[in-house]
Image 1 (cartoon, one colour):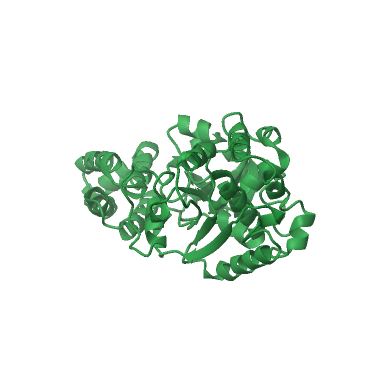
Image 2: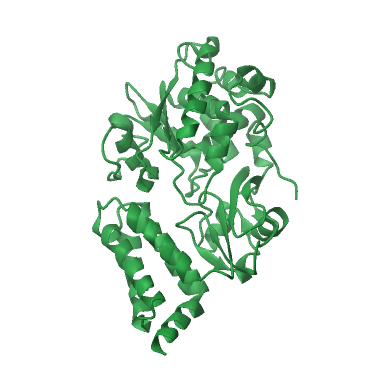
Length: 417
């Protein structure tokens, strides 16, 4: 099954830091084209492409941009969320190490479109080896006139600063990320106001992740109509999928939106490495876990959402039947309990209580009433937690209660005997 390499077109084929090789592959032509357009023409092009965020929510990129464009301020910012803290996800790492100049070009286009002159890349603390790659690419772009003052001979100024992350999962949440850049503890802010109006240092700020941004230069280069011919009507373009877990051919692959999950597992991933397929977690550590009978589905933002599932960051974790599904859930809950920033009670206490309930059932001390308690607590967390960590961390538990209910009953019965 052949990939459709659009975002990954240059990865492994050019020197990531070479301006000459990047330009020979079409690099910076999107930025040069953008500089001949008005700001609204660029935003309209992104709107026409129906580019949606690749970080999980699938929010229309043009809406974010328009909010920042419309907000009057003496300074605006573009922030790249390169925290990539979702367990099992490696797509942004591949883009930053293999084609960092595409990110730089896209950030400059975004800055021009919304009226920002300063960009920030917030790099995950656990990616220290990527920092020199980005530094070299930024310096080369600056020396070649594609960053700094009067970019590409225009009157537009734009530069990029690198910031190391706080080593915290919650800093992947956009407002916690802003707090971290500003030198404070990474905790989410109250919203509204949203970052597009009041973001970094209280100024209008566009925040997109690496994969989302890299699409921008391609859309400006190839055009919105070309982009819409990829993927599905509601979710155009390609998506990077990280196939991992108990699979033969793990890695990061690129396919048009709407690709079959079953095909990704068996035709791309080579099938289950050992044993038989038990289940698949979609989207990352906070994603839903489906069973082996549910994998015949198309992966695009709308199709997945109609099933009550999120495409998330595109992570596909394959789980074989040598695993205890409750052990998988317990491991995920241990992660979330550890990573909770503690700002709000539903998340701070809820993650720990959920972990305790699942562990109790695994230890043979559970009862049927514990399953009711899990559902009630999960609903409370999803309704009242301050940010996405507390809202999403119950999803693996609830999805396995629905899709692997027998495993919970078996553990409870085992404890009774």
